[in-house]
Length: 330
Ligand SMILES: [Zn+2]
Ligand SMILES: [Zn+2]
Image (cartoon, rainbow, N blue to C red; front, side, top):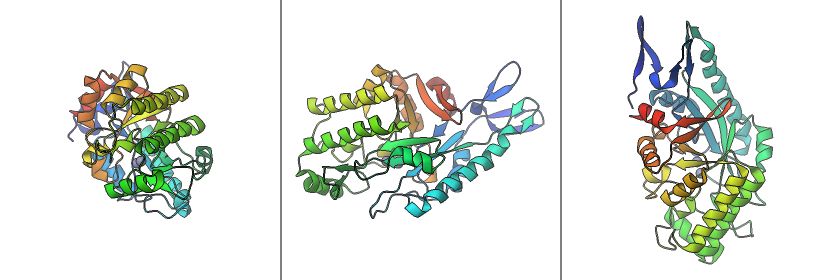
């Protein structure tokens, strides 16, 4: 993505124009382009965290948040290994301080910041199996948490329905084995698990809200069926009550595993009507995926009536105008 750069006396600045805001007295940074959903080699991402940072700077991101998968207490290929949890936190925090070092550098009225790094964690919630979010907040100096459900339980914790990953056959097999092929029971368990996670653990962000639809592809149910719509409404009630931000996640589309965003248009409309705040994320597992489909998604959200996105900064959540975001995406 090419970005306009600020022309300064004595040469071109390396600061993308979208990162600054000029007042009468000074230039202050505003953070427009960010991605808070990123997986590095610490979980199922491809590269070291530093590789994502250099690519993020290339792509014009002002803030990059790492959100590797929290450990789960069984054999798997996607989550952080328990023994690397502390190293993960230290690595990201070291990178955070390395990059924030330049933030206070002052050139007359110009404040320079290449990028801000945040430490997050995408925490799996499986009742009776996973650690509480509070425990993770104690174990790591987290800047934020993403709460996600990838594995659905039907009361027997030794049998879990895996709704994610690259293989549709695993979804079908799990549905059969864990829920006897009863899709309504299975999808109900999925949304109830999200509701419980939101109520008990209050994640800052709810990850890929309707991912359970990914391998449905209209084979088992229609998202317009009243029981499904009711489950979504109940879940949004809980999210609204708790005050979580919902992510608009582009991964399903660019991986060609879903025809629509997570969540899809019908749920996005409900989020807009209810004024539930949203953030835009790519769920990147490779550096080049960091801002994938951001332009198209910002466009779609604008067309649906959204005018604002939530952006996380070291000082907390900020509201960013979608119009301003356009100017740095186009
Ligand atoms: Zn996820
Ligand atoms: Zn993820």
